[in-house]
Length: 144
Image 1 (spheres, helix red, strand yellow):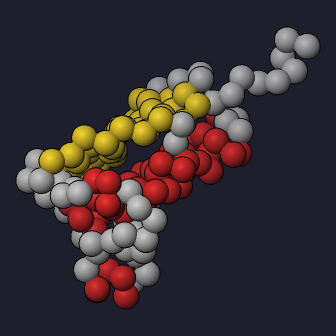
Image 2 (tube, rainbow, N blue to C red):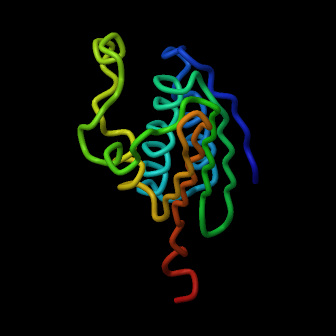
């Protein structure tokens, strides 16, 4: 199953819509709760980053039997120093965004923590593509 969402830029009221929809879909499919939570957190963090830093972007999600693949892409300014951005608490969010409760510098670290695989392609001035894979464990007891 494949899903596509446009993530609007500079609209915090709609940030998280795509991750919420995917969460509902995974619940309907009977995916384990821990996998749903990891998927929702990782995707939500990517959505917020798009709104804060890139003026929005696109979310493409593929759900297969053994994995969920999330590709978040934008045409924003890119990440200048990826190593620094991966550190807990590092943030380049403007003060206004922080006053709204966002921009704590946990987006990329939370994506890393909640993904089984994380790949980030970015370059200043060229945008960013984040690919996250969350594996779905095989159901226990089915063959027992």
